[in-house]
Image 1 (cartoon, helix red, strand yellow):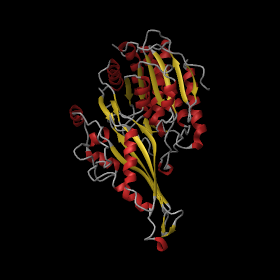
Image 2 (cartoon, one colour):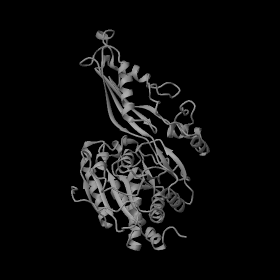
Image 3 (tube, helix red, strand yellow):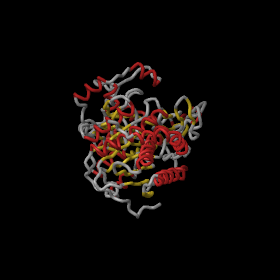
Image 4 (cartoon, one colour):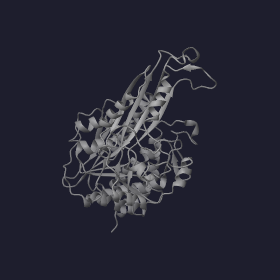
Length: 475
């Protein structure tokens, strides 16, 4: 039986040019959440999304947070149908380095079947596939097959620091049976995937202070502790050459990779030499005792994300810098508590501080890892929808990244069915210059989203009644 009714398929086909135009308009907005100068662009993007939802008949508003606003809207015509809560984020990463882009990052350009722009695949193009599906269904049939709620935030790229508080204070508003999002990628271009696990994230900063100002290394070298040297000592002891994190207690609560997962990962096509060549490195260095896929998707790890301190210009400047610092991130696995790991990290760093400097350790953000069931009717409906749209059965994978908002919704709302989709390709260059999104994936993703709505309406029994948006929101 046809997954999507014929009139809806026709509506999707006829609407593709319009949908690409809508994406083009959305991508022009430099909604960069990491830069305060773009707070106006962030708000503009949130208002734009709300307006697009309202054009489809949704009722909603912008909800203020301590940071950027959350857009919420709903269309819940059924009393006896399941409710899906669709999540997305309208903020994007900075485009730097801009000089490495083939096209201006906020001037969307279509080339070789792909649209190039910051946010094209992460996450503006992917979240709009749900808008496309909803619009096509309404245009063809006048009514959705189930209740739909939309929640879109503007701080995902900075760890969703305020989304958890929004969820906690709006539990009734967000009540639903299923959470769905498309903010990922296929395992391979020809192999769509379903993500059933995310690693958590802990992001820390180390600041080391030495003399009150940069001092002459000839006059004071040998008597003043160099903050940059102290920093390198500390950083060199965070991880060994086998990829093992050396923080005492770091692995105590970490859930190891299950034998059946190791078997599944081993069955996935993966070529280390090809991966290394794509990344431009001489070889890959997984954690000792684990494969590359296990190390990057299901094992905890630690990375230095940035280092600063001292003179970095051309030529020479013989100084001992006044200060130095580093940003360090840890990817966590199920059962690791980011607050506890942060405490262990700080204790370990402070135990290595040499005389002559002071050190400050700051926790920037922390999110738990997540594993969801693969056996629910909702997941089976999702797998069927992906196969229907892409013509290939999806594989199940864990993702090495983190989506703090998903953790916040799972813990705050108690929803077990979390459908983590991804229409992007592995080489879409998200977070990098020349980010792009295949227009064919945009089309097929819209079809999969439509099939998913119909599939869930049949497969999932409603557990939660629909709730209309409250009026305390600030528009």
